[in-house]
Image (cartoon, rainbow, N blue to C red):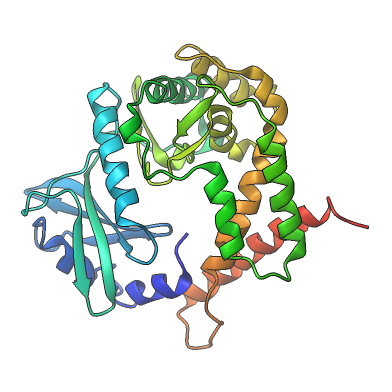
Length: 330
């Protein structure tokens, strides 16, 4: 998630009808139908929905201090490659300048902007999944991983590794946060001892939860490859199924998901015994991201949405910290 200060700067441009002159200014590079531009959400990215010649599209942009240009560029090359391999992946749309990413200078900062086509399908909630849909979800991730195993080396550049994600924590956490540092060190040493082969380790989506999946009939659309990371394939399964709670292979949805996955690619099932380690890795990284995100002091002048969001994020941050402390109680 982006810093709250960054989010506030952009959200201050949004009116009561969810319109923003900033979003419209950025979309001048692509063109849009008048009156169709609305903000959809702000989290890791700013997402706007709009229409052009009656067709639905999505604008995604980031403050240049939040994302690297080269990382976004690598993501776009990746999703274009995946589409050529017959995967249903949202594709970027060129601007009027013929580029897939625009750098837009504004009064409140510099933004990297991309427009994606809309993908047919519906977002489902975890508790409404049928067995068939859980199977299709797992099947889609299996097919994605099988494709990524054949990925050309030049498409793996400018993607973070699990080591780099953990190392970035040192740039975020205050030195006095000793429990988080202990947890980070534990996870690093644990991961360094895991088996690492071409069949169990490579580029993964990293966030294949249902929020980034669109289901329609027998097809599964895939969104948001911006966090793609060099990691263990099993980690992608564990992270995708976070809504099931602590990972358990005998959970009905988990078991069905894995069956679907195995129809498309090989799976090193021994690594499921390490699921708790992958969860701990994700938790300590998420904790650091929350520490970075909550970068402004609460004020009575804040709008209610910001007060509520900060309160929610603080609760999440503290829950992560408490989960570390149980391992290091004296």
